[in-house]
Amino acid sequence: MRSRTCLLFSALALVAAGTAFAAAPVAVERGRDDGLHHCLRILNLSDTQKTQIHDYLESQKPEVQVLNDTLESDREALREALDSGSTDACALGADVLTIQADREALAAKLEAVRVGVETFMTPDQKTRFEGCLDARRGGAISPGL
Image (cartoon, rainbow, N blue to C red; front, side, top):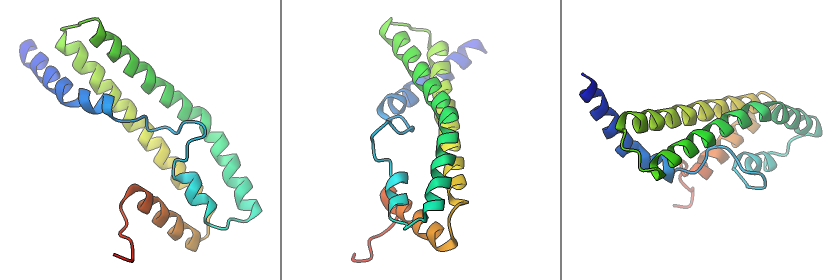
């Protein structure tokens, strides 16, 4: 039973290790345009809305930062295990699964933040905001095509 579990973890490790390292961090680095801010700028928000959204985003930063720090810490632990030449497939697989769970938790939080931001918008602004985010993700088709 243990060998099957180790085999499963090593298979998962091989498949997921590439994605764990190739994928950029989900959180936004300071000064980087992440799409959210770009899309907010084109909505003609009122000063009140801008203040409300700014305050809301500031209130969410600590939680997002903790999740991002956890993800980076777990990635570094996996890198160190790989660099040390570890051949414990179970441990490596568990590290990869931890990273995957960290990324999912961070993505869920960022989605919740996006939904929270939309609570300060009019229905028209929400529609334009979602369309802008979809276009930046490559989900929308340009009307000229």
